[in-house]
Image (tube, rainbow, N blue to C red; front, side):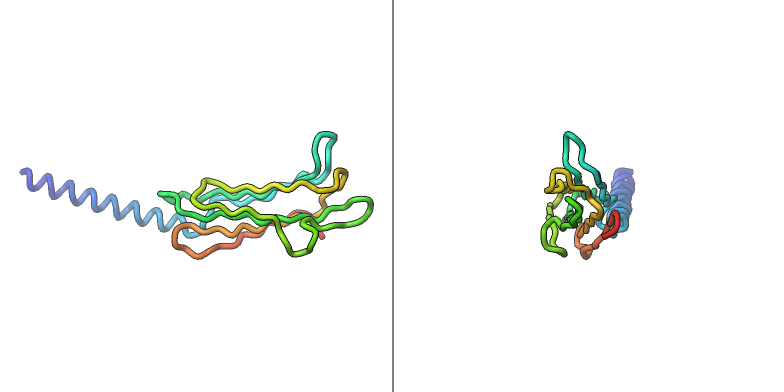
Length: 141
């Protein structure tokens, strides 16, 4: 009787490990759960216009990821358009490993400037899967 119970318990544990392994690898192929770009286009009396990129992790367990946010804006100040960072095609970025989320916010450098375009690129990876690039854009440039 003891041998039968041991065999059943062993089969259950092996089966549970197999199901968990399949679930984790299947659920993390995308590398992230959400990737969002939010923009406050107009300044207020209390704060400058700003853009924020945020990416959250997939449900990998244990957490084994790389979450990055690359972000840039184009803004209007005094009737002229400017990129921030100042060279078109460059970005401010934040890259983190083994975290629940990564978030990068940039404020418009001109106190009264208004944002007319924002772009965020989210290079993300979960486990040994390849990096996935997610792109979010707001407005027109």
